[in-house]
Amino acid sequence: MPAQVYNSIEEEIKALKRKRGAVILAHNYQVGEIQDIADFTGDSLGLAQEAQKMNAPVIVFSGVLFMAETVSILCPDKTVLVPDLEAGCSLAAMIRPEDVRKWKAEHPKGIVVAYVNTTAEVKAEADYCCTSSNAVKVVSAIPEDREILFVPDFYLGSFVQMKTGRKNITIWKGYCHVHVMIKSERLAQLKKEHSQAELLMHPECGCLTKSMEFADQILSTEGMVKYVRQSKAPEFIVATETGILHKMQKENPGKNFIPATNQAVCNYMKQNTLEKIVLSLERMQYEIKVPEPIRKQALVPIQRMLEISQ
Ligand code: SF4
Image: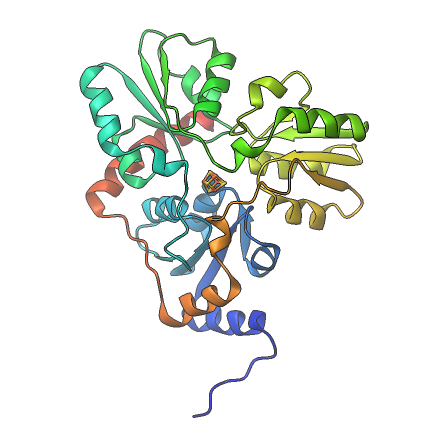
């Protein structure tokens, strides 16, 4: 039989999705053309929670690997595919499960809080997970007398420490190579040049504490997307990965969005392409399946976080 001819790659993806009974979930940092063909876009936890609600047996996850693992943890009965196995994360790679085990052995009564940007193996060693939007709430829920290890993001951890006033917290010195590129001096200059603009900052930004006095909002990616919908400001300076500007601009055509720097591009996120999504659906590759013992352990801190942040 001659091969089916499609007018566009988007049309081909739609046909393959129908054939596989698949949905596509895309992170807010994906390139615009992937966000446009996705069934749902959002931040890592939002996508995993959306996956739980969907009836589709196959999920193509266009984001990075730790996020696909979270989907696998929450949806063990679904087939979770990623278009490219090179889509890692420099921040998640900065903490290993053995690092956490070592701290726990030295602090038997200590509590480990792991940001969702960690591997399934690290989550399995943690007591609580958190996102950038609920980290303060999660840490505040832990009894004052318990020592805490916060992993892996130093800047989010420092922000949480400042907000909670917590002294007995050890913060891992990990960072995201994209968010450390954003500089306070540049943000100050942009604020001066755009007097009507609101500055939105992600707590992973390396210059967060230095820029807090003139930042208008400190928000997670999805928090930013929601905020700009309801804000009356005509312009926004956006201090996070530049992929998010696509969604903001699409949803708010009358508003102007300025990236903190055009350099803030995550090379891991950008491994995914429409062509690789076609191959993923055609060949049912590459499956991400968290082994059951790790999945069960990693589910506990995620569920604790969800209970606290309800
Ligand atoms: S932007 Fe940073 S934290 Fe997000 S996936 Fe890329 S390297 Fe990881």
